[in-house]
Amino acid sequence: MNTLCKAERLHSKIVIEKMFAGGFSRSFSVFPLRAVYMSVEQQEVPVSILISVPKKRFKRRVKRQIREAYRKNKGPLWQVLQEKRLGLTIAFIYLSDELCRTEEIEEKVKVLLARIAERLE
Image (cartoon, rainbow, N blue to C red; front, top):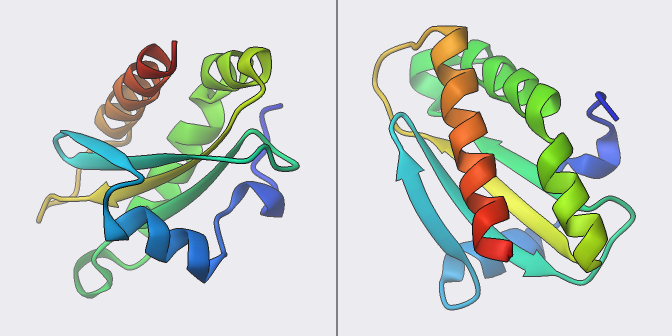
């Protein structure tokens, strides 16, 4: 449960385009992160994620922080999705121009995941 396997990463260009085209997806922000999420047919894992960080500014550090925060805190969301037999795709978009502490990013990811779970209920 506390791993992040390849199946949990969003690769499908069709699904990504659909997510950002509007109409199908919902989104909200908790600075410095924005979450865009969309229901999909149930897949092999309940949630697949995409992480977008400005490459010019940060390279890999922020992506690693977000991935780790998601990995640690995905449990409650997974339980809600499995009970309802739903699938979900989530894109985490980093908005800030500065680096944030790992603890701060983890708190924001927790808030985002909790809000998504609330809106599904």
